[in-house]
Image (cartoon, rainbow, N blue to C red; front, side):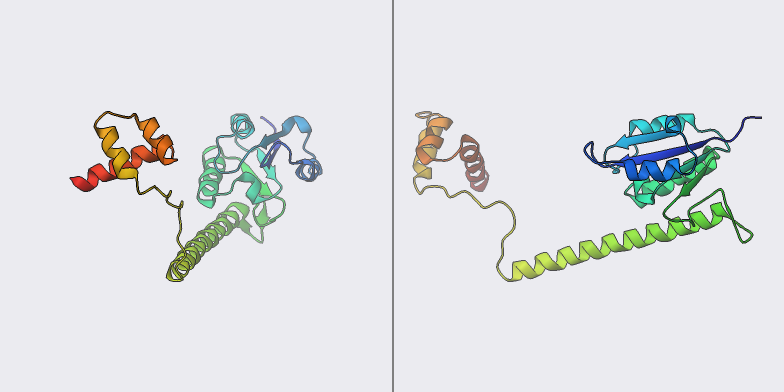
Amino acid sequence: MRKMKMFGYVRVSSKDQNPERQLLAIRQMGIHDKDIFVDRMSGGNFDRPAYKELMKRIRPGDHIVIKSIDRLGRNYSDILEQWRFITLERKASIEVLDMPLLNTGAEKEGLTGKFISDLVLQILAYVAETERSFIRQRQAEGIAAAMARGIRFGRERVHISDDFDDWYVLWLDGKVSMREAAVALNISPSTFCRRCKEISSDDQ
């Protein structure tokens, strides 16, 4: 019968960040470097080379250790999906060192660690989504208040000379190029083109 193996997973957001603190905590669990997988990239999704390699290595009964839940990912709905994949489909267990309740391989006063861990994750996901809703609400309220004070958002519209219409007619008649008209008006060709389209749509 195959013996249970322990793996570690470490993630830092960029190549210049130091993963040593996470590595030290995982090594203290008795996990060797050859069984520790390190990604140096954002936690926005799970398309990470080391993480995908870890998923290939794990077998039923294996145990994965991470330092904190945000090292696994940033989006709790994605974390929940991966958590279920690992524990249900791959039949491995997960342990989060910074949050002892998140240990699917432990028994806690007669309750399985998986039940407690799933419950805690659901609560964390709810809290995270609620906080995102509050942030969006505060942003909307802040923008509304700023607009009420007369603050305008977005890129400031480029000032166009009063001579634009004359150069627009010259361009329509083929007497100047778009670039020549833009240079004469001291604007970019793209701005001239955009303004021409606006005039054309206004005329329709």
